[in-house]
Length: 478
Image (cartoon, rainbow, N blue to C red; front, side, top):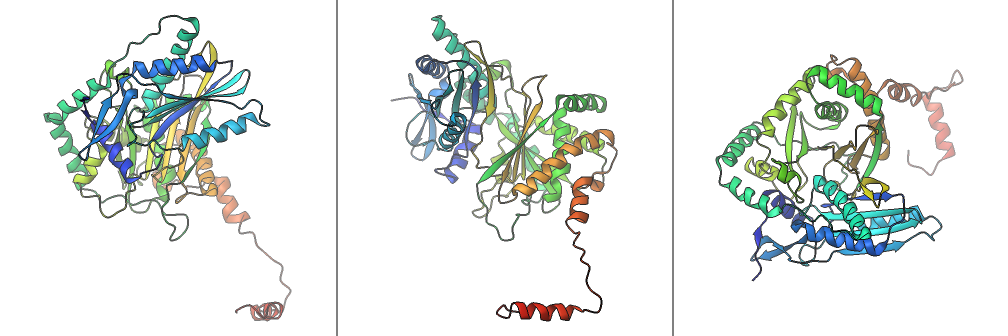
């Protein structure tokens, strides 16, 4: 009889939410690695097999035992590895990109007993390849993917050079044991009391206003992106040092100022994914550790921006000590779950990712680009991706099309970019006085769009023009 392990608290949140969205890829995570150099498909498949053999979380399958989900760790397992050669296509890159998105949108079947990770190697030219690693969130989080791609690259080099691979790894089951200890501890009770007290004082946040009246909620989302130039990002860092906060706090503040006018009601809730890795061993372990911690804004419009940043700092400092309690337990105990509306309570999901994506395959330079499943449940998800201390910083905006169309998200992104230097130069400006539109956009809407002046001849009235229209279109209703 195989040994079964209870799901950890982070896994339980993901598993039960996935059940509400059966057949959906909402918990697919992973990335595309762009490799500028030749790769061998057989060596790559062997490297992927070593990666799975190294990490017990990648050999985990879900077993349902009398209605309760468990993990079963397979002793040995061979991952699915797909190889495709698109180099002979008219547009190899476009063909490969379409294939990637199609494959990434395919959900994992939790009831199949299959591994919850797979890999692809796509050739688009003799010196250009894509590597895809796709994972269900039950077995990996964003921090894990950075570890995995780095180790996959090292395994590839080991197989090619026929040298012994480094198979050292920490077991996810150690975290599972730590998780069980936490549930029976005083820390769990303290965390529960902290969040129960905080949420009991708040009304459940309301979502953003849909872009079209009576539009129904959909899981479909799209992605817009921008880059913060390194020089500007360094300015932000210097500003934060001066004011005793971090870049993380600053960007949360900018997102709040930029998008809070779109929220119905007075309470804005952000969901912040946190590492939840308390020691060095856990930081080297592959698996799902991350949880979502809420950050609430209520009645902050009269505060200067620099005061808002200190408020964010102080609020998160208090909440981080209690970050381990799952968000679902917080909101359920607060009585926020009613009816069949399974949308997340946070209007904005904000992820600040400073992961080490230093990756190479056979000494070929490689770039890691996180993928999107295009099924964002929150109104908006913002991902800040700082890959190193040199390159520009990428910011992805995954927006649910119930609440944003292309024009609105583009306006918001333009404002996001102009708002940062504005706040750096004038941090004492009260938040409530900051317009969602910058000067150029405001002029475009108030003056150019409304510039409909027409020279009418003297002596004619509105009724004259009304009669003219009746003569031209007598069949139309008045």
